[in-house]
Structure formats: structure tokens, C-alpha cells
Length: 203
Length: 70
Image (cartoon, rainbow over all chains, first blue to last red; front, side):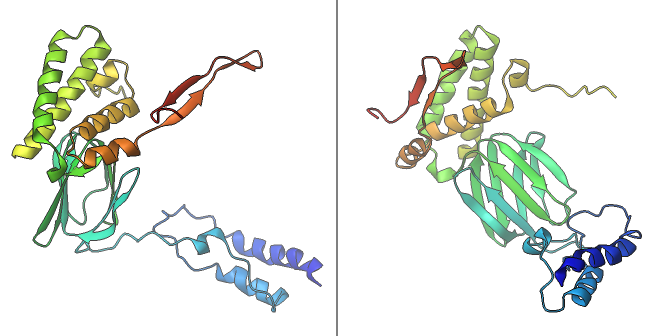
């Protein structure tokens, strides 16, 4: 009985698909419902079987881009070994982008920002949570979701000031005495990271 | 359209972004207070053995292990 099913479905499906050559929509704008013409044709040929599922029906659709600016920013802050913040709704985050401290409010322009070693602060009402981020990226999406990824992020209280001073002195000295390009670059990175930590602890 | 973006100093010295990022992360980890420092360094321990192959046979392997005696 079902040997004819695929032929009948493809016959009715091709009739419907010829008018579906439209521009590709972004995945945030695709409807999460299953194609109704397919479901109807399926039910005509195999009324006792459920229509097959497609991968998109198992996926949670991404939050769509609202037409008006949402009130909260949704933050995902992940590290390689832990998920610090997962879909947390906050008012604002300030990220240490290479172009300077960037304040991100809901409705921010979609941006990909490379982060430099610095402080990231998450503002929720009157709470401000600060982390020192070693480096990473921040992806700000049109739907007011911010994905921030970092290799290492620590709360400021966990940094030892004396070790930072010692490291800064060490690397400043290494920078002065470095010979090859690579050594200079490594020493420069050391100076930058330690100065950033110093500034974070004192500022 | 020529891309005239200034290259970062580490890229100019031949370093890749991953190397740069890992160096930054290691420096930050080294400046943590105890016990966070011990946790972080423990987390980042690696253990691997790498050998190049030539003519269908593996050459002498290089072993990198942060857990001594294993």
C-alpha cells in the first residue's frame, strides 16, 4: 500500500515547490512550524502514520529579531571549561574590546569584537559583577543576544597584586633585553597583560 | 580594495592568534591567588605522546606530560 506513497507525495510536492523559490531567510526569521502542504499531502496518502520529523523541528529556534528594542540584553558568557553565564538577562555589559571599553545595551548594532586583556562588567539592576578577561571575542547579535567567549576569566578578588607587580617588572626587563622578534612579542604581551591586571586591581 | 588594517604586533612577529591568546591566559593564571592558582594549573595539565611517521613507520615519539611518573 505504501509503495505508491512516495510517488504520490513527490507529485503533489513538486507542484507546491515550484512557487517556493524565494530569497533565503535568516535562521532567526524562519517559521518553526512544519510545512503544511507537505503534511496535508502526507495525510492524504498515509492517514495513519505521523508525518516525518525534520531536523529543524528538533532545534529550538533562535530568538527572533524583535521589531522594537527589547528591554534586556541576553548574555551567554562561556569559557572552555565552564559556562559562566547562560542566557542571563541583564541591563548592560561593558566589554574590553581592542578598540576600547565598549558598552553593550539591548538593541546594539550587530558586532564582532575582539577582546583585549581587561575588565568585563555585567550590570544587572544595581549589581555589577566584574571579571578580568584574558582575551577572547564578543559576538553581539541583532536579537540582543551577546555571546562572549574567553579563554580565562577570573573575578578580580582572585588576582594576587604582588605577583602582578613582580610579573610586570620581569616582563619590562625582558622587553628591554629581548633580541629576536618573537621574544620581543612575548615580552610585549607580558607587559600588556600585567599592566592591564594592575590597572584592573587599582582602578 | 586593499586591506590596510594594521597588523597586531604579535601577528607581525609571526605568532598566531591562538598562541597569543594562550600566552595571555597562562599569564593571568600565574597571577592568581591560592587555591585558585592550583585549581587552574591543575585544570590545564596535558598529557600526550606525539610521533611523526616516515616511510610507514613511527619515529621516536615526543612525550609531554604534566603528571610526573605516568
